[in-house]
Structure formats: structure tokens, C-alpha cells
Length: 341
Ligand SMILES: [Zn+2]
Image: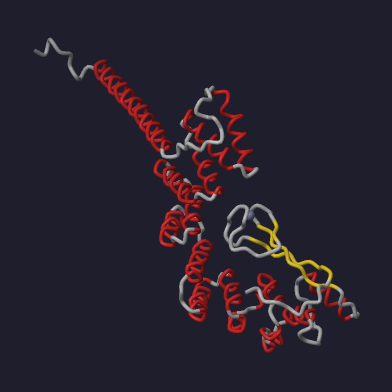
């Protein structure tokens, strides 16, 4: 029998066996990847069917597709989205995904649905993306925002946990979510203050301190420290005069300077506030000129968009509390102060 079969000790047979095994594994893995790709494509097409609409503004159903059209149509869809024509953008994104099976366009489709106000549809698409790409951070951040908008706080928290597990710094998002949930709850304002004060004591994040001043300025002074002056200077400036704590002012030079300019106290501070516009107004006031006032601009550190009002999330890029307060001088409106509440 041994004469019929070559010996396994023969080196040529061993090499042939090895090459044969490698070839078989390569063929099987290639076939598997093709099958997997096919399954993903079918799944995507099935998923898209749920977005087929009879209300298409564009006649995409009878539009023939050519590969060279992909980029121009994609750019056109982005232009529609930018100009607020979300229905047309959605039609084109669906058309492109249908013909190209390009999963990356799903992110644009989800974003267009979000901007058009179809939050649940947008969630559905982001979840579909995460089914295939569970670590896609853009989809995770957007999903968290959508759950937050729908007041589904537990689901939003679960998404943040996934991001946290991926090493993302989501402390701000977690604090913002906790505060939002507290404010959304039916508990009395006093209790809300206590809950947020607890967050501030544990995490010392400025977002929590700003909320404390908005809820109850008189109690919030108990948590004030000079290092936070520049981050809440807008709130301090707009406090009603009866909400100002004169004892604390007497101990902090930046506060003395601010409230001297505002006219709450008479004596000018023996030092500077650290904010050029305030110090300039203090000098002008000391010289008898009270024709100017402070103005505040909030600049997002991520997208650089600026706004006249503070925001917990940037209206443009949706980043949580990511702004820098720019203090400038404007003509006085002769106001005695008003509350931000
Ligand atoms: Zn922004």
C-alpha cells in the first residue's frame, strides 16, 4: 500500500499540502466575504424599502443610473440639504444608496431626516449604521443627541456609556444630560437646585454652576469661586441688583470691578478684573463717562459660530457647552439689570 501513496515525510508532498491548504482557505474566505457583502447589500436594500415614499419631490424612480452621476448627485443632495430643501436631499440620498449600496451615505440621510424634524426615522438609520459599524462615533454622538431631544434619557445614557467605553471624553455630555433630566423632571425648583448642586460638588463643572445661578442666584453664591468669574461673568452682570451678594463682592476684586461698573457699589476695585472691557469701563466711569455697557458674544470653540445668547448645545455643530464668552463694549441701554431665568 505504501507504494501507492507518497510518503508524508516527502518534503515536496508537504509543501504541496501546505499550498493546497492556503489556497483552500483563501478561496473560502474570499467566498465568505463576497457572501457577507451580498447579505449587507440585501439588508441595505430591505432597509431602504421602509423609506420608499410616494411623496417624492424628485422623479428618481424613473431616473436611469450611471456610475459617473454619483458625485454630482451627491453634491446636489448636499446643496439641497444646505439650503433647507430636505425632502429633495432625502430623495437623492435614498436614490444614491439604492444604486451604490454605499453605507457612508446613510450618515447623510440620517442627518437630513434629523434636520427635517423626522427624529425617529433618523434614529432608525443611525441604529442601522451601528448594526454594521458599532464603533462609528459620529452615529453614536448623533444618536445620543436624538434620544436627548426625545427626552429618552436612559437610552441617551446607554449611548454615552458606549462612547465612554471607546475612550471618548463624555463628561460634559453626561453632566448636560443629568441636568436636562433634572430640569425636565416634575420635582420642585428647590430640589432641582439641590440635585444640580450635588453634581457641581462632585464634578465641579461650570455647566452645573451656571445652572445653579439661573435657578437660584442667592443660593448659588455659596458655590462661587473667583476662578469661575470669567465663565459666568455674563450671568453675574445680568443679575438683578437684589440678587447680588455684597459680602462676597467685598472679598473679590473682579466682582468689585464688575459691580462698580454696573453701579451696584460706589467704590472702584483696587485692582483689575482680568477682562479688558470691564476694566476699560471702570476707568471710563471713574472719569465720569457712563455712556457704555457690556455686551456678550458666545463663540463655539468647535465650529467658531457665534451667538448673542448662551447655549447648552451649539445650534450649528451640537457640541455640548463648548463656547467661550467674549466680552465687549456697546452703547448703554440704561437698564438696571434683568434676570436670565
Ligand atoms: Zn459649534
